[in-house]
Image 1 (cartoon, rainbow, N blue to C red):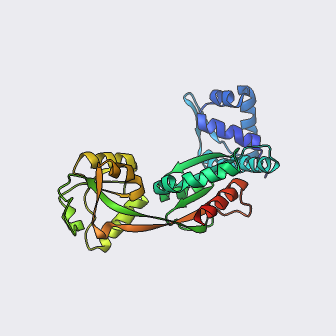
Image 2: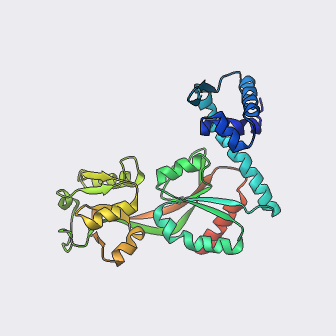
Image 3: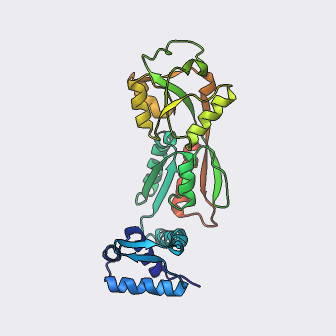
Length: 299
């Protein structure tokens, strides 16, 4: 059974807005016409996709089952048209890059400057996030290529290369912290202080806990949780809280004398980075251009 792209577009618009009227406005069609298209899709599938309520349209279990596949088919169709137009010189093309923060600030500026010099009509979207978020975004077709720490390869994700860039994660504190100025500070010395860190499901937090366990200490008490490096730096700079961040993300604050690293060897680790993309036989032209520019910078 083939699914009509127009029907899928209507289904996605109603699912997103929760309203036939709002979906009709978004798609610039009349509400009766949109209702007919949606009913034809339900008839074709033999199931009810929405519960019609006074408060709006709610997905049924069948609708929830169709939603991720409809999103994927719609995205793939749009990508195919964009790639063909880019090859014909008719479109600008879009490159969606995912990167961890230190790569985004240290590597991407030079790479993107090079690629836009060579291909000035390219449109670039950047997602700055940690590995677990980037893995989901790459799998769900929200981004095209990723530079990050290790991500498990799967039937959806392939490792393309290892990038030469490395950085270090270190413990940070305010410049007047009682532990500053001491030599050979250990994780045990931090027990009386609270930490601000990403949540327990975030990859940096898992890495931190692993390092702590490997050093023979229980992970310290984390009193505040946030995924925002800016918030972590602000809290550390103004309190006696401790944090743990990649050094490229705190260079400006260090130069301004707001925070400093603490020499805790157990928690100072150098990271390696890799390039990932979705597994597909055809690499989109923007991704190929990006990988070419990345190799040039590496060289």
